[in-house]
Image (tube, rainbow, N blue to C red; front, side, top):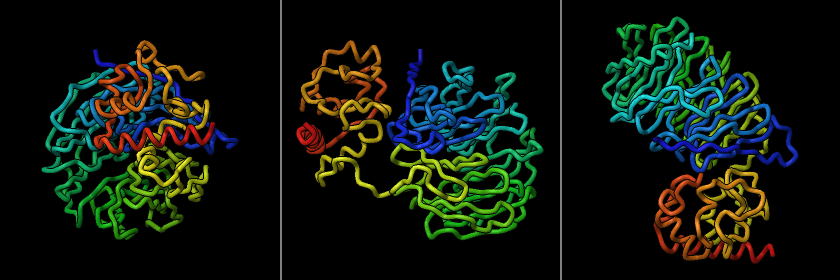
Length: 416
């Protein structure tokens, strides 16, 4: 039976209103977001999909089902949600996230994009090999067709139920509900995604442009936003949000692409965006899902190049940045996805008070030493601490493992 792990992640508010708190729970980059109905669903490189309650700023459930990255997520009108992955699978989840209703078989190609029909009866998935799969949620029957000769970089349903796709073959295509070709339009550059707006189809490109097409494929407007590729886009009501590989985000009018606000959301690529009527959500390499107002204001005052706590300029501190996504170094601070690692050296595994460890971890007989920490990152958590909630990761260079251990020791000594 495929292993599924669920846990509740409670976020640290640090005195901020709940609606201003960022969402922390992934153990690596987050590349997929969707928001609505008071919830947000996220998919990460750590194989996790998390269903978040936006009113309480908590994760209702953390699920691990896919083999590899969760590459796309979508909410359904019923409150249920769908995830797709590097393993080529589509999984339909109940609203509480605890049990999948249905999962397709693993595929030979990864899913690159997802869309949900306006009536919520069908999900469409675009694959790296150019195929599109349509899944009828009532009958759980799937049909597929070859939509592009290269990766399907984006897709979405028009209000009348027709499907629009863009691909690595530089084509914008519209398909009828029977998957018949309605039109095919050549594109001027590589498309990296699309969003359906009130005015038509907004497409982001590798040349840094956002272009708007009507539902017949006719070009309407363009806006060059950057000299670097745009990598994520979303739209709601009269607003489009687009982001680039350098962390910049633009909010634009959906009818003529007039810029409204610009802000920096990350120190690197913004891999995913989502939007509600009041907020924009962004995610990237550090695993944090950040909230922004529709005026582009950071609701938790994000500083993109801020140094991590206890940064002493060492190689160990640099390696620690990857751990800091899920762990604090403050004593008894278990507000992130994982427990505090303060004083970890010499401590038996799963013994920090105040953290809810998995039963599998509590049954292990490990003392954390320089040697065992090094072994953890040599072999990876799946092998060394099976059954833990820690995402699979390794540190290949022995000198980096040594530097991390030395750093943890220095931090503990400095605090005690």
